[in-house]
Length: 201
Image (cartoon, rainbow, N blue to C red; front, side, top):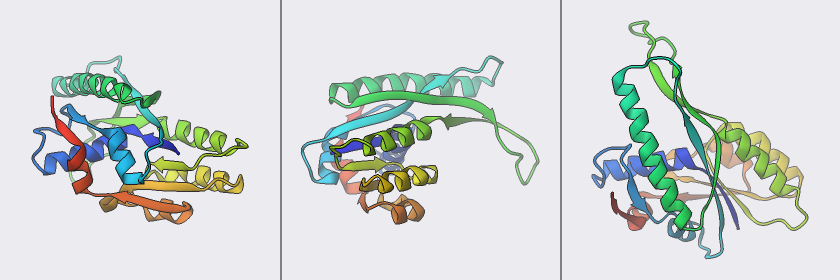
């Protein structure tokens, strides 16, 4: 079974659950997690070929607020350690796209803009790989771990090639549009996340 995971979004979801359950002190903190075992439990199979898509963090070439710079440094260090841990779990890492600083839209209340971090490029690579895998004569079952509606055209293209794509997501964050176009949907809950949490670092 081939599993394509939008890594930044999945890690953000796991961190949110662990933070709410008071297992970690900060959503950007690093933590140990048995991702491979978590996927085996969720998908009910032992044989997995997991591809985890992550971003490179792009430092801005202009001065930014100290607090934002500290956040970028913290995310960079946490991401480095997280990726090293996943590599030790025999998970393939694909770095595509960037997490970069951009100016937000104007606030509807005060009219001000702020600097925020935005991910770009990962969905394009996942979509491309989904279609490429679907073109192979000996197809594997493909699981898509992303709730990004931008991937719907790729799911549709894969279906035209005879590929059945399973949508994998958090039960409380299901994208109905993605679920409608997928062959089937598998969800995970808080209990499964807590089962595979191995502690903070």
